[in-house]
Length: 381
Length: 61
Image (cartoon, rainbow over all chains, first blue to last red; front, side, top):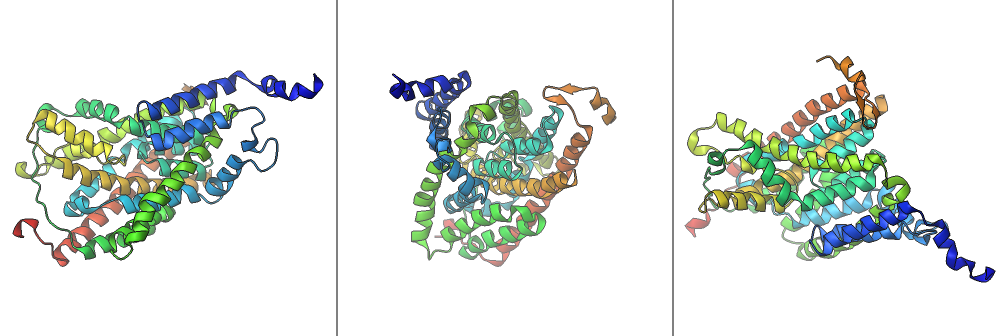
């Protein structure tokens, strides 16, 4: 029997925490397949959660020193942040900033709707999280998975796995979270405000110069955001230059898909039972929800404030502020759907899309600002 | 606001560090100001671009 003891070795090493992680992995896979909640990320994360919680898992480098997931995390995420950054090239190539360039005022929505990030950081500190964990948790409110992952890694947060799961899960829950938060701070009359849409063509020169200017402005004010903003805008420049169609298509499809496949399963490295099953993880999940709510409220209240100083005919629908988060295009769709529900002739989609892409810029700039200021604070501490 | 009161508050993860809470308030202020500066600059630049580089109205076609 001694020769067959290897069959039982794994059972002996099994802990109840591992079984809980399998269940969590199973739930994430179920959410991805059955509910179609961010399936491209939640499915790999869910499978990865099972993969890294098997006793003596070779993927983790337990049996040998070169576990593939450990290696992917170490090389692709921890030491170089290559994976989230390369994903930004693909995301940048997917974004059409046209609706924002047509109505640049919406740029301000992308700033206001990041309020949730900073409120959540305060909340996290009040809950007793260390500063690095508090700042990482706050970035869940960026509604931008790669930014949340990148900031949590740079901040060396103990909750990287929970933050990634929360960022992607809540992004998928935007259609549920945002309408409730919007209704909380708006009246029916405000939600019925109509806005003119004047379809114009944005010049090609503007579209080409925009990513370069964004990179430079962000780089001067928040140098730590250069990698984030720069890679996002590099992807966009490839898209808009008009002479790199093949590269643009590759960035939007093959590159983004390849990175997405491995990013999810790599992030699962942080979902080992010993690290993931803590009370802090549970709190991070709750706090992350608040981040989305405060983002929405921040954006809406900002537009309401602007409207106080704007002539009646030029007032903006406050719901556009809620679209200033990075969850694209879910947030824009939510605003459009709510506007039509209140008034079936009120088409806000293009305005909402403009605010939504402003949110994509705002979220990476916010991530960069937190890195700039936060790392400085941590070094001084 | 008397931040010393926070010393009494025992959080769910342990005692609250008042210095950290004050730092996060600063982060809120500096972060939001920084964000608005970046986005306002971009707003102004894009508006100027809109004036310099002529747009074609699709309705004119």
